[in-house]
Image 1 (cartoon, rainbow, N blue to C red):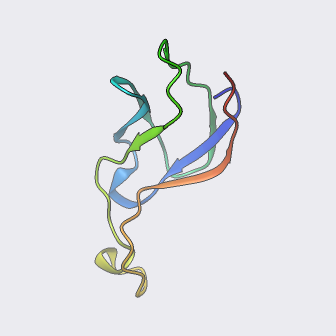
Image 2 (cartoon, rainbow, N blue to C red):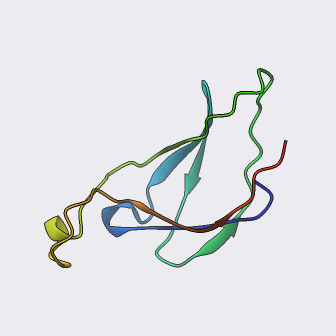
Image 3 (tube, rainbow, N blue to C red):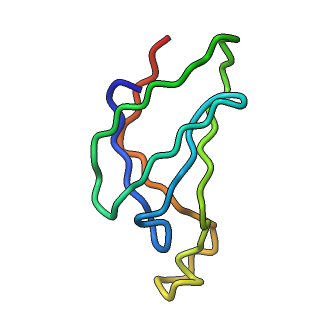
Length: 83
């Protein structure tokens, strides 16, 4: 992703997320603030499903931050994918 802007949510701050396609996963570490990240992923099979594995999915409710029960972990402001 040449231009990707991510941030971590809750207990995921400072943890390793895994990003990739198929078995090719690359760790990225995110902070609490949005930051620009470039990730180059080896994709010889030209797979089209991107995986983002969140280390500690957590709901805002479980963290005392409102009533939202959705399990979250990452904020994505912008993502650009090129082949």
